[in-house]
Image 1 (cartoon, rainbow, N blue to C red):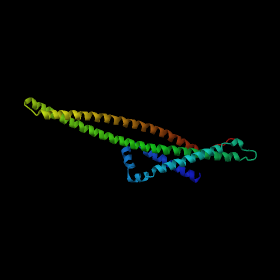
Image 2: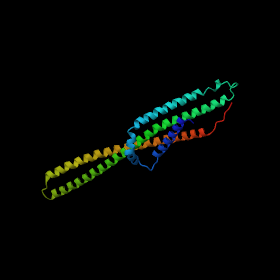
Image 3: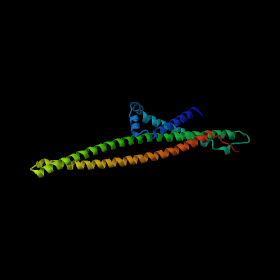
Image 4: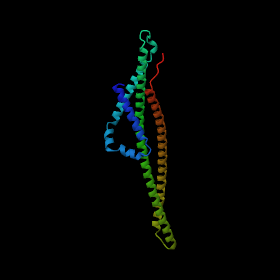
Length: 234
């Protein structure tokens, strides 16, 4: 394997390791989000988009080159076997290497896109979980305040029945209770919307995990086919 394809294969193995690391179930999206927002990661991501585009361009170029090599050596019927008895073996070897390089470049390109998408989904899920917790706290606060004002209103009503009470203050408290009920209702709707977004994100993450398992199985089959020598037939 040449130096460039050794580098691409190493890059592919690194991508597989990172994807497996991001799919570890006991590391929460919040932890990944805090890691993504650390100073080191922020310093790296300053040029992350440029590096990503350069990596994509290189992998696309190598994939096209590997495809060209596969087409180039898929012409065994044009070889003069009478004058070159060992040419067919040489062509099969070149064709095998070209196909191997094609698979390596293709999987590296695919995992590069998958890795970026997976990191984006983890960040979005962490943001949704944080906003969901904020909505829950806000709803609990509004509910407690509404209960307190309702208790105060009931106490004032009881005091009004026993004797003359402050009617204006009672009216103001009713308006505040009504306002707090409306705020509580709006907060509950926002909380329900946030829960729906979190469920949708979890479903999308589950689909992504299934797709990754399929790709990992195809990668294992590819590695097995690369390590297994081919039997030449004439």
